[in-house]
Length: 313
Ligand code: H2B
Ligand code: FE
Image 1 (cartoon, protein in one colour):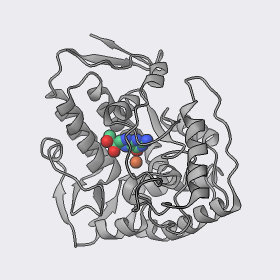
Image 2 (tube, protein in one colour):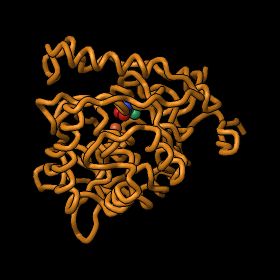
Image 3 (cartoon, protein in one colour):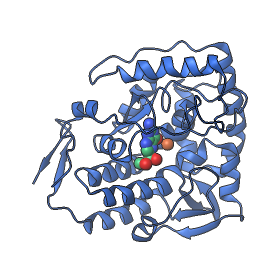
Image 4 (cartoon, helix red, strand yellow):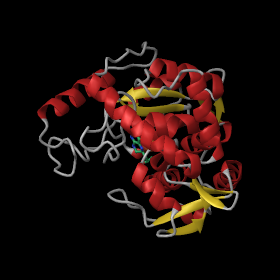
């Protein structure tokens, strides 16, 4: 029995199952725990996201001065670290986003202009969702070059102002300063879509493996450039503390080998004790394709970019 999966980009409307984790209403580890104003704001933005449907215009969000201020603090700190610790693809794409005025240090950007930029580069778009999604739903949308991030996670929700350099859940800063410059890269976009396509109709065990590969490459991956370790993963590029930790000689570093990486346990409460290192994004894509060739599914799918749908062949 093959689990249901979306066949057209519009069916991502049905891929919105959330997982409850790190809720500031109940979890004291969340920096916003007990802050009523913050909790209400987060709920308001999540409601907006939950109502979003395929084809809707993205609504602009009015951010408060305090929210813009949190953005600026993180922006400045990361900018400094990215000089030595971000991969060249990231730095090049971030420079382009800044030159075109899509991202600025001063103000939190709106999703609409981010999407206009990404669509031109790789056809990826961000779509709001209202929380941390199940791995199956999240990966399915990648098959259509749609990145679901909640108003909470992706789009419009921001970390708590008392902890500007850390967020227990992915927030707007993670999505915009971590993922967006990387999704503007053709090889990384292709790799993300390939993982998504492999996930459609996959077994629970296969989903777990794909989520793990995604975790170790798209979120926490490193590469080697000029003999130095540099980040390609969005979870590192947007996290000031872990970025330094990952590139230091404290954690273990292993070569990215999809069959092994897919089975590795990972840490989502604290810094990783182990990171995988790819020779580069193109090389990682090549290895993933080899892995995809051996991935067993009782059918095969092709993606049609003209209709934005998948068909069985
Ligand atoms: N949901 C949301 N909203 N954003 C993410 O970045 C995300 C997710 N990542 N669900 C997923 C899980 C990822 O960690 C893997 C595929 O489990
Ligand atoms: Fe992420």
